[in-house]
Length: 173
Image 1 (cartoon, rainbow, N blue to C red):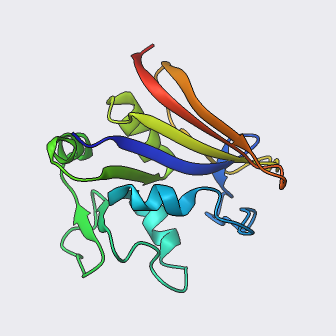
Image 2 (cartoon, rainbow, N blue to C red):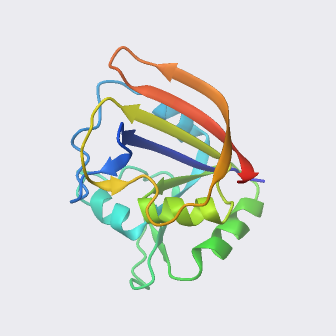
């Protein structure tokens, strides 16, 4: 069974992007475990707003993965890099988790993070906390996340001030 993993960066005050979706505050000076994590997954799960932000990059960042973009309103826009999913995301991901292969990466954003957390589809959270306070932006968990107990698996600090924490989700609050 595949694991659902949220691998994401956040500001110290809990924002994953500025209000306009910009992520210009993220450190890009080193890998921070990204490549090792990237090799452990074969599918990305992306909310539509996050997908729109990815389109502003020079190149689509996950060309060698199976990429699903969740949108209730953008049907039949599939192309060679992404497949749009307009059906129930929870049921869709439950089916994906039953398959063999590598893990699933929930890329974001905040609404999808909460949806998958509340539906018990996340097994781990790997969060890179950047030493910056944005003051406002898109929250890590938008809406009403349910209480969850977490078990610390790993933590690492870097000279840049970034701290990366890996938690296993223990189950319902």
